[in-house]
Every structure is written in structure tokens, then in C-alpha cells.
Amino acid sequence: MKKQRIVIVEPSEIVCVGLTNLLQGSDFEVVARLDSVDALEECHLLSSADIVIVGSQAAAVGANMRYRYEALQSRTLVIMVSTVREDEFLRQADGVINIYDNKTKLIKKLQTAVEQSQTNPYSDSHELSERERDVLILVAKGMANKEIADELNISIHTVMSHRKNIAHKTGIKSVAGLTVYALLNNMLEASEVNI
Image (cartoon, rainbow, N blue to C red; front, top):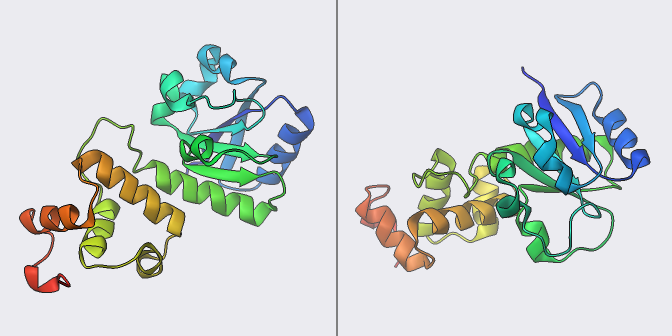
């Protein structure tokens, strides 16, 4: 299996070295370290990176990095928090790690972020992924986010991200509208819908 290549954007050398050491021997490899998000525009290694981990202190408050830095739209974006940050800032990321996470938790969160980024709403495609179709069908059947997470064996945060992506791609936000969409696109039969 190919190692996922990571660029870390974090001004603290201690944090970067610690993160790099934790990832040794895993499916992840740190290929570069940058001191600030502004350095992303000049980083030649970013083109070969799969994941960009940005320390919450390295990003400007309220900055939407996905829109500001085009290269982040096609990469897994993970925010590393060391202090409390507003939810809006964290929502732009595919995953969030904490400086207090142990190695096992860190690797699991990175794997989940990579899975999440595969349904990235910033991609050009408006076609639903297979996982988004699975989530849509379960939403149309009347299941709650927690039930969908349990059924598909994914986190509730991943379910919410899939639902956000579905709404973005279809332009439909209501459960009723999504149910009609699923019925019209032959994703399920009318008998499967709880009315």
C-alpha cells in the first residue's frame, strides 16, 4: 500500500517533530513542514502531497483555507487543534486532530479524514459517490444520523459530512426533497419509504 504523503503547516518545531515521530511506521509519511499557510503557495512538494495538516495557530482566524488556496481543494485537509476554535473554522476540514491524541487515535482520525475527503464537496463532480448514495437511501428511509452511522459503520461526523455533500451536489436540503430525489432516480422503491 502506498504511503499517504503529508505536508504539515505549523510554526512549532516541537509539535511537528512529535507528529512526525508518531507517524513513523504507519501508512503516513511527512514530506514537508511549513511555518504558515501563506507558504502553501510556494511549496513545490504540495503537488505530490495527499494530506495537508494545518495547525490551528498557523491559520488566520475565520480564514476559509479551501477557497483561498486552490491546491487544498484536491487534498485531504486536516486541522490540528491545540486550543478551542469555532465550529465554522473546523467545518472546512475533512478531519480534526488534537495535539493530545495518542498514536492510535491520530492514525484512525487521519484514515477517517482521507475517507471523508473522497466525498469532498469542492470537487467538480456533481455525481453522488457510492457512499453518498448509501447515506441518501438511508435518509430517505427515515433514519437518523446516529442510525445511519451505526448501519454503515462510520462516524456520525462522516454521516453529517456526506449529507452536506449530498445537499451541495443535489441542491436539495430537506429530507422530503431527498426522498423524492431518491425515488425519481430509482435508488429505492416507494414501499421502502416510511410515510
